[in-house]
Amino acid sequence: MPGFRTLDDIDASGKRVLVRVDLNVPMNEDGTVSDATRIERVAPTITELSDKGARVVLLAHFGRPKGAVVPEMSLGPIAQAVADVVGRDVAFAEDCIGPAAAKAVERMKDGDILLLENTRFHKGEEKNDPEFAKALAANGDLYVNDAFSAAHRAHASTEGLARLLPSFAGRTMQEELEALEKGLGKPQKPVVAIVGGAKVSTKIDLLMNLVTKVDALVIGGGMANTFLAARGTNVGKSLCEHDLAATAKTIMTEAAQAGCAIILPADAVVAREFKAGAASETVSVENVPADAMILDAGPQSVTRIKEWIGRANTLVWNGPLGAFEIEPFDKATMEAARFAAAETKAGNLVSVAGGGDTVSALNQAGAADDFSYVSTAGGAFLEWMEGKELPGVAALSR
Ligand code: AMP
Image (tube, rainbow, N blue to C red; front, side, top):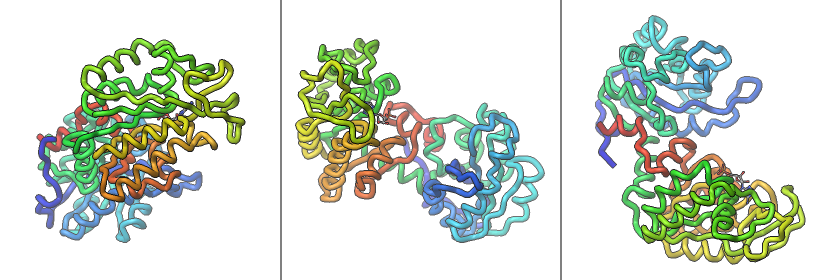
């Protein structure tokens, strides 16, 4: 990973610091924040800069207003939510550029915190328009990016600004990049990846990249059915992308050439109905009844997955091993997650996981806290697993 500067390298006192954060938080109908996790993640950067005497100017997007002012997507109500989390006043300006922003920034004293209105109210944000980036830069001396989750987008506030101002990674960005470096950048071998979830079609690039980097790739969830079917196994009524048989075969060939073991389920929990408490049975994958669906990996498969995790020094995980939201099809995911958490806690494993469903599965298993790192960045985490350069990260490293 190319180097980047962090808050350790910043002389922030008296400076206007533009800080790109992720405040795209879920809201209740009454306009209050329903889950403040994202605010909590960026709070350390905000308070550290404020403590160092910076004038902290927060930039963020909210929703998808597509370049127009959409009042329901105002960041106004979020200013109070940020204030509640950081325990200090947070002022708000009704525009992120122009006179409203300039006046609010001029009024700031050292240590003050100001949130500017939704950057996506301007078309120039998503176009990464240099003029818009310049207008943003007019209110700052330095730029800090603490929004890893938006780093896969080359927008003015995530990429353009880094071209105009001295740039630094915030604490959350730093933590995320360091964790990812341990996961796939320079990992301690052997490295095992677990990739599950519904479909192969959404994860082809990711699988192609992983087989060149890891020692073993565990494929689970609905997407394993596509691999089993490509191999000639009858998967009955299971979720399966039969049209991707050739792709699955290519991935298996690439893996063989790269010396990456592909671990597919040997047994499965099958049912006739996709609902909680449905009657289920465990069968070998060679014996899936024609009218049944595979909804989870079976106990033999879980034992094998645990053996691989036990042998590994590094684990990278995206996607559940089964339909974990519905009992009893949560077992494989829960058991593997708890085992990986215990191995990590015992100091035997570096475990990095991410992606929306994966985070909720690990939380459901009570395993998330013991993982080395759980990324809440959906798209950015997946693009990182695909081996792609993230524009927001590349800009910091330049
Ligand atoms: P993804 O968003 O691609 O990570 O997919 C996650 C979803 O895949 C979850 O909602 C799971 O319920 C679903 N899933 C996992 N395994 C299966 C399966 N064998 N059959 C159907 N859906 C599954």
